[in-house]
Length: 84
Length: 138
Image 1 (spheres, rainbow over the protein chains, first blue to last red):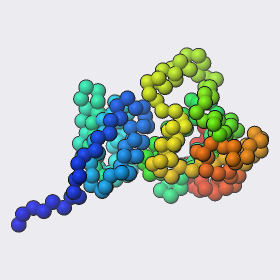
Image 2 (cartoon, each protein chain N blue to C red; image 1 turned 90 degrees about the vertical axis):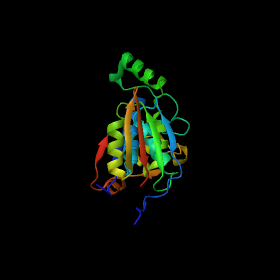
Image 3 (cartoon, chains in turn purple, cyan; image 1 turned 135 degrees about the vertical axis):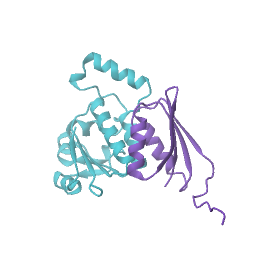
Image 4 (tube, rainbow over the protein chains, first blue to last red; image 1 turned 180 degrees about the horizontal axis):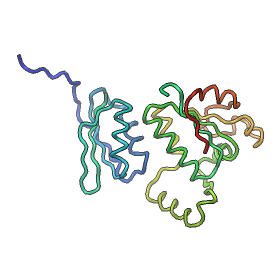
């Protein structure tokens, strides 16, 4: 039997450039952007706030939105989050 | 904790303290916690119509050196406390109430407050809404 993908359809990843924003605005702008996404849709967030890693982890735990990937390169944090 | 709001009592009307309070409110709102803000004394004065985006100075402990650091942070793109509160209201349940006693002291009517303020309440209504949730005085 072929594997069935039960995840919600992904209609393209939305990009949120939060570089340069200070705490708590990267999370606030992310929460604002999530309001316009469908369940299962992905959002890519770029941030330079050093607190972003801990803040995104806490936000994910509290809201149930999933962090799909988290990485850092050249001082820029990159998160891909999936709306629950 | 899930149902009771985080309650912030704002007393001070300087931009540094109001910004600290706005950051706390926005962070809680992003996590889905209801936020209840009670405005007293000089904080209420800062929420008069057409006043929220004006400069309100800094707490005495800032001194000239602290003021310069805050100015540098703002120049680097930090949001104003009023903009942070507007964004907090956009993402969560943030209710801002003016203290009736402070309204009397300042000679203010509800129509003279910034649209960020949702209403006017007494201290008993404040405690009733606060329930068993945390209360911070800033």
